[in-house]
Each structure stands twice: as C-alpha cells, then as structure tokens.
Length: 569
Image 1: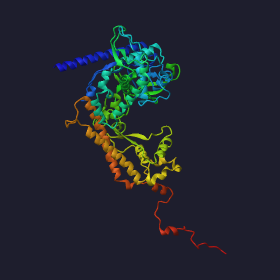
Image 2: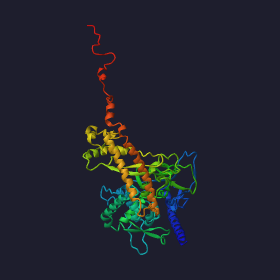
Image 3: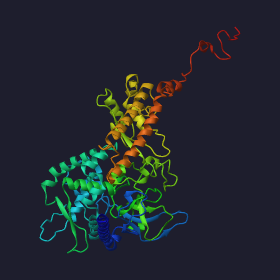
Image 4: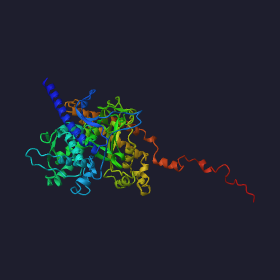
C-alpha cells in the first residue's frame, strides 16, 4: 500500500513539475511567439497516459503540443500549417540552432579552423546547446558565479527570452538518466551493447574523445566563459522561482547535451537542426499524420522570401486540444532507442512493423517493414593488394556527390513482406571488396569509368561466392553475439527492468532481420551456378555466345558459295 501511495505521490509531483514547465513555455510564447512564429497554432501541455495496450512506454506523463485552433479540409486537399519558423542560418538570430553556427559564429575564433569532431554535427549542436544553457545561467543569493558563455548569436530580446524559456523546460540530467541510453548505468548500457549490431560503446567513445579534447584545449582554459555548471530557472518568478543546477562545459555536461540533441533534433533542408518549441511534438507511427517540411516561407508574412521550417498536417481535421504528433522518420529499433530513448510499435516484432496492426495506411510491406532492421558493416581490407585501386574507385568513380568510404554500413530488414533480400548497394560494394584473382583485370585503368557499374551485376562465380559468404558470416556472427550475450546469468531471458525490455525489443527485431537475410543468402549460395557472369554477358554483347560447329565455316549465305559465280567471260 505504501508503495502505491509513493507511486501516486511521485506521479503527482511529476505532473506539477511538467505543468510548471509548460506554463514557462506558454508564457514565453504568449509574450514573444509572434516575434518568430507565423503562425503557431499550438500550446505546450502535459500529455496524460492513454490506454497503453500493454506498452509500458505509454504509461508516463510528458510534455507535448496541443492544438489551439480547429481545422478541417475537404477530402484532405489542402495541407494545414500548424506552425512556421525561419532558420536565419547566416547569423543565427532566430530560434533555430544549426551546426554551422557553432563553427562560423559562436566558436569562430575559439575552435581551430577545420575542426571536425568524432560526434560530427551532433557534437556541434551540443556545443551550441551548452552555450545557450550558460547564457541562461542565473545568480542565486550570494552566489557570484556570473559566467554566461559566449554572447552569440545576437538576437532580439524577445527571441532570446523564448530560447531561455525553452532551455528551462528541457529534461534535467536525472530525468535523462532514466530516459536516454547515453546516460544509463553501465550495466544497462552493456546489455544494449550485446542487443544490437549498432554499438552504443562506439557512440560513447566518440563523445568521450570529443569532450576530453574540448575540456583540455578549450573549456578548462577559460572558466569565466565556460562554466562547469550553471543554474537554470525551472519555476515562475524572477526572485523566488525554483532553480536547478545543470552540468555544462564538462565531459558529463557534453554527454548530457548530446543526449538532448539526439532526442530532439530533426534533419530538415539538408541539415540537422534543433527547432525549439516544435520539438515538443511527440512521435506518431502514422507517417500520414504531420511532418516537418523545409522550404520558403510566405512573403506576406515575412516581408520577403525566407527559408524555414513548417509543421504541416496531412490529417483531414484537427480539433482544439488534440495532441499534435509527428513521425520521427523510418528508423530502425536501435536508432530510435539511441536517438529518442524508446522503441515505437513499428520497430517491434509483432508491434506494427513486425506483424501487428498498424495505423499507417498502405505501408505494411513498404515503409513499415523497413523499420525492423539491423546493421551490417563491411570494409576494404587493409591487407588487400588492390586496396589503393579500390579506394580510388570508391572516391572518384561511384557517386559524384557522395564519394564512398572504405567502411560501409548497410541495413538488412525484417517485418511483414520482407524476404530477406539485401540492399543491392551492399552486394555491389562487396563485389568490389572481393575483386581479385582472375577478375583483377577489371581494376585496370581502361575500365575505371565503368567498373562500378560492372559491380551491379555478378562478376564471376568465385567473386559472387565471396560476396555472399561475407554476408552469411556477418549475419551468423551477429546472431551468435546476441544469443550469447543477450541473456543474464540466471539462464532466463534477462528481462527484469524496463530498460531490459527495451533491449529485448531491439534484440528481437534485429534477430528477425538478420535471420531472414541469412536464410536468403544461404539460398543464394546454392544457386551461384545459375547466375550469368561478366564473361558470359560480354560474349553475348559481341554476339559470340553461341556454340561453334563445323557447319558454321560453311555458312556462306543462300546466294554466294565458292565457285558459284555465273560470270560470262
């Protein structure tokens, strides 16, 4: 009984906290929203748990977007714009945070030219986020800490107030420790490591390497500018509002910021971006619901053309108070967990993407089936005698706008409608990787412009066997690792906590994708002699593919044979 009372009290405290944070966001929107949003037909609200259908992930309170305006369309002919916001990518004077603003504006004279961290754009956005946290730092009582980060980008007061309010409403580190794998306990991270081919330890190593370098070379050299911790106001009132301490320019603060960026950023208009207030929209498996679209905003609203993001609805109607949800995209189960901290039904075996009923119309064998995936990585071997030739081909002769690296990662899929057939690009890459022996003549310079196209079809039986075997071995090794490491010492399934359940969801989905691919490739291995290879195709193109017979030498045509001319001498 006391445990139930404790749960109820905890739920009530959680609701009060979220209601306060929602009020902070809505107050800022009420006062300054029109400075940047045109329109913003929504408010931030507390989303109560719905009928979870047995899914523990649906049992928690959370913040979300609620419609403030009703809408209906005739047969859904017109899309409805819920919100629109310009990027201001050049100077960063808007709300949107983009990676290039870190190197070109905020840290322009601090980071070395050409800085390229292991965490890439996610790391740059994390550095932008830490700086905004520092700019929101408040002085409490006699605390003289006044470090405020870098006062860039320059923004109008109203827009900066909006951004500071958004910073206040972000989940705290303790909340993220429950919600995001990057901040889980090491024991839970180890289980996730053995539940997927997408390794969390690689991400953690990249984060730690970047934060160590930044801490040693940048942050620790100027603590007046880069505070180790900040105080963030999470309650109303300038004088008596509640404040919380957050880690900032430290390795712990960087990991916290990366977890926030991964869970709240969107890829729009060819860039990863943080979109404050739009990021309150929770995920919906229904791809036909709402989506974020990049484009040019209306001239009447902005007094000229401006690039920005629009939150569009594909629904036929929206009522006031309806939750506004968007699809976070066709990712696999491990990607969803490592990005957002949950595994949606479409990524689970038997949960929408694995044979269950889905709300998404007409997508069962299309988008949804691709949501049950696993990753396989392959590379050109360092000891390959033809490595330099192959790297040259990958860099210059594959795709003009996106040269290929010597290490490539591909998705294999499960789910309804999936036969296990691998991505043709994976087999094409593996044919090049395994090219050698009698087939090495194709690496000669005379074929350099054509060889990548040649790899889209079988080269020789030996080469094809090498490509097929590489996939079979990769699938078997991944399945073996999961089955050996996916159980705990008690001989059971190892599913004791909610984090264990998340790992199990990922593991089951990836096993299905790997198993189907394995079966398909094993069947391919038994039919290698039935394929048409390069030599046969080449002979056929020259008209030399038929068998020779002695009669072929006597085929002189119907009107001309030796001695058959009727000349009148």
